[in-house]
Image (cartoon, rainbow, N blue to C red; front, side, top):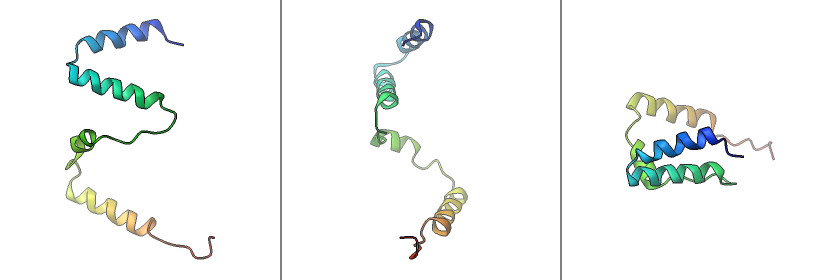
Amino acid sequence: MVDPAIKEQILSELDRLSPKLQRRALELVHGLVASSPKGASLTELFSVAGSLDKQSAREMREAIEEHCERVDLHEW
């Protein structure tokens, strides 16, 4: 069920966006209603590329290596 007040606010905000941003908004809505998660587009990935500083990237890599790259031979 659509809340008329929310729908009106969304449409009002869409009117203020460029066609390119309107397309992105549509993609976001499609992603929200899709039954399975949708992967990010290359454009979305490039928009965040380089946003992690070296210290944070190193900490993330170390955490992954320490906690995620283990095989428990007795687990299966």
